[in-house]
Picture (cartoon, rainbow, N blue to C red):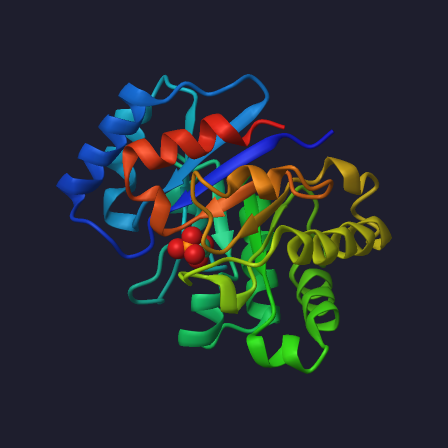
Length: 246
Ligand code: PGA
């Protein structure tokens, strides 16, 4: 059985001092139900201080991105060597990185492999654009991203985030999300490295908040959520974690 998982993606928000204050408030407020994993993913400059604030708590820390090489002449990049002391998880292939920074599925796969080689867990984000959905290509696009992204990788979390539902007024309907996520589960069970697809945590992401979380986690193939905007407020994030257990 996969475990209920809530990941807060803070994206490019907050100063280091503000990130420290948010982590402190989350630590003070949060009660994590047994069987639930809660993680926050601050921007790189705040990772060390947030990890320090959360040390000894049950709240984990993840990174939002990584470069596949472990060191070298890659100005401005951050490697797994710099992350493994503070992070258990690393988000790879977020749609903002695919769309705004031109990341390809091959490059994302190299990142995912580097993350597992360093002993951390990649959170692979996949999801179709509105155009793909309108053209009836949602399943095909997502399948390609899962197969390419996880080639040679075992032990990942997969987050289905339809591009059109991120930071939107409304997310995908729970039924729409479930449909694609059941399909992702099928694809996973077909990948040789995933002997037990039912143990992979599948997260839904896209405009999740404390009012709608349970409509998602009530679905058979949704084990948790990846939350952007609503993770920037301690109370709202803590409520989401408390409601996520299924
Ligand atoms: P959102 O972002 O919750 O603000 O829609 C989700 C994400 O991009 O991970």
